[in-house]
Amino acid sequence: MCTVCGCGEGETTIEHSHDHDHNHSHSHCSSHSHSHHEHHHDGHSHSHDYGQGPAHAHAPGMSQSRMVQVEQDILAKNNQYAAANRDYFAKHGMLALNLVSSPGSGKTTLLTETIALLKDELSIAVIEGDQQTTQDADRIRATGVKALQINTGKGCHLDAHMVGHALDELKPEEQSLLFIENVGNLVCPASFDLGEAHKVAILSVTEGEDKPLKYPDMFHAADLMILNKTDLLPHLDFDVEQCIEYAKRVNPRIKVLQLSAKTGEGMSTWLQWLKATRALHLIEYQAEAVA
Image (cartoon, rainbow, N blue to C red; front, side, top):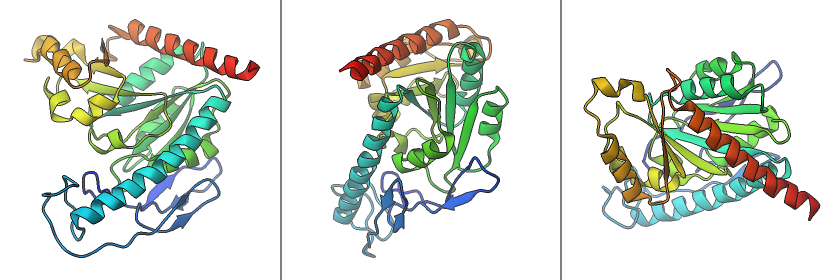
């Protein structure tokens, strides 16, 4: 069970490059070992509480103090995996971006359109996170780039352990651009470092301009907010300036881009950001190589 939001976890399935799937049972509280990472088992009490206490949340059968301890253990272990992923990205000169949003923001369309515009210039790979189906990974693969699907079952987010397994299978090319499309959820993915260089929050103008205030942890964790589906603005009562002000109130350093992945308006600025960020990343990679 995820102690961040209290949602349940199911069986995680990560695609393999060969002809059969291999199931990885991911439970943050269950024992699991693997050559790349390992999980540990934690028991729990059976008392009930309702979110009043240091955890500021509730989970059936778990006390507030126990929830805090379990969450600290989970995030500490996750951070170890994230550090391993970050080392992998650095060693191979890869720029990894963690795309986060609520469901329906247009992440996959943004990715397919981005890939169509960049795939002749850059090597690109995608790790797709979703609870069920391989539809998003299939859409990415149809563009001609490598993609691997992680199905989290009842899980609400990707963690660094899953991404480490996916890297073993996907094997992105050296100095490639890696997109990690997280599970649609503006709560839990904010807490899990995947080893990425940047979190990019995608917000659709159909969602309401107050999302940054309602889900501040996510917008605080993100370095960039993409305001997507701007082609719909003439038909909506959405205050762009107010939304940006809310986002900067939560995170003064956040950068904001406005675009429509569907019409292509604003996509050039997004591509410029990607190329500039990758160029800076490669400078650091090359400096490390000669040090």
